Amino acid sequence: MLKRKITEQLIDWKTNPNRNVLFLKGPRGVGKTTAVENFAKEHYDYFIHINFEKYPLYKSIFSGSLDMGTLTKQITLKMQTNKLVAGKTLIFLDEIHLCPRAREAAFTFINEQRFDVIEATSLFGTNPDKFDPTPLSYETLIEVMSLDFEEFLWASGVSELTINEVYNHFLNLKPIPASLHIEFMNLFREYMVVGGMPAVVDSFIHKHNFKALIKEQAKIIKDYERDIDSSLKKVDRNKVRLTFNSLPSQLVKDNKKFQYGVVELKGNARKFESSVLWLYDADMIHISFQLEELKLPFANHARFDIFKVYYKDVGLLTGQLGQVAQQAIIDGDIHIYNNAVLESTIADLLYKQGYRLYYFTKNTTLHMEFMFKYKGEVTALSVNEADNTKAKALTSLIENHDLKHAIELTTQNMEISEQIHRYPIYCVMFL
Image 1 (spheres, rainbow, N blue to C red):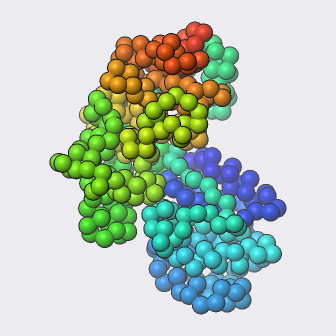
Image 2 (image 1 turned 90 degrees about the vertical axis):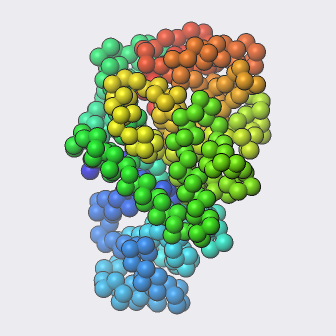
Image 3 (image 1 turned 120 degrees about the vertical axis):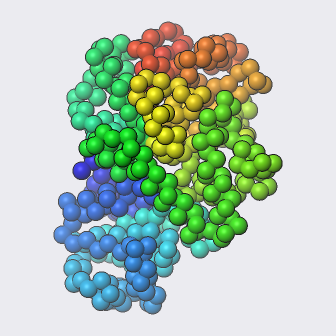
């Protein structure tokens, strides 16, 4: 069983005496259901799992009155269970976007703290007319994501002690021992190939087989495509599919700015902007916006019509690029395809640490992959050490745009100067 950070969040929620309904959102395949099932086994005597996707008939439980007596009768009747004990039962409303009435019933369940309730959905904001994505007053929203690099290290058998040793070197700005540096670089390249989807990670850890890996990644892509097909009318689903399937082509370009013309010849924002927004609301993609000025707050200085798009898990990109690309990365070529995989990996890991994604471009001469607020300051983050123009870009930003700090993630060990810190690329997990 994979060790997940979401487990600690679930425990924190349960220990809160004033806990609300917990609402888990996140794309299909990130492990929401598995996490809740494992949590329920450890912390509850009784577990009621109502999955509206697998069992559409369960929606009828909530078609009548939503008072406690009616709800408990309907659950015991239609789910054939008498294990509904106050104070000892967790009710899990899975894929709740398919039954908005169940969301209303959740308040009844938690009233007077009789039952604990967790809701989950894979398509949180895709149909606001039928399912409002705004958290209700009695809901606590948590976004569940695929494994980050630290969780991948746990899955790979790396101990907390070893991770803490590397972290202490990072904090003290001292080079990491050579043996650890080599080990962590090897594991980071594996993460670039595998990504963090639990089923894919589990397959890789047990089989170390690239063909099996690609099959698992392809299954997730197929699941996403089925969600697109089942959620949209034909005319809209075709546009969303075209947009989704264009992402590898968007990312392998030297200029990774999202271009509607790559989606379809002569494509434009009028036709495809809504498709990008649907994929974002479905938690399938990250969007990184271009900054006009390097000032905080970034949201006030962003161009929301100029952006990059990344998959929410890098394994979905490498799975589509295929085994040749995956083997090249494992062998050390992390800058393959114009840095597409590496930049996508860093984008995903930054987001998983709570950063919103922005980048900066000035004319055609200055481009910085990531800009983020770090230790209270506007900070540039470069991930392309293979391109000397990036080193010049860092210097230019410091000299001409009043930046106090910049970070470069490299394949080399720690190298610290007054204004530019060069960290091994796996240290992104500590930023």
